[in-house]
Length: 136
Image (tube, rainbow, N blue to C red; front, side, top):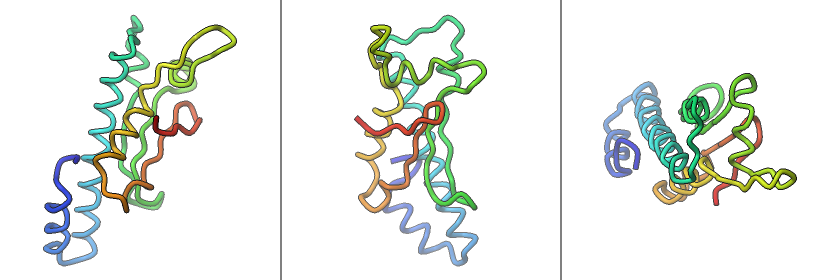
């Protein structure tokens, strides 16, 4: 799970000694999980046959840890409004144009849900161009 096991995380929290130490350990755990989710989504990109010549979509996939004012969580994102407007089309499909869904973010969320303890599963947030993504 991420860059450390839950047992290591618990041990590190016990040894943190201060609120700053706890915050550091939490950021470290969330950062590792965000990186793992990002990498998983990028692998899904290739598994689903998405191979755009520019690489903009794959390059727009990113994971980030939230541990500050925004709350505690993990955000997986893809697409932006200027270069990768088609990110949502690939994730969700576009039936009117016979374009099938080829999800790459939602399988990453499902993967993180499997490796995370039950009490942390609610902290994952994922969006593709502002649309919430649910795990498959």
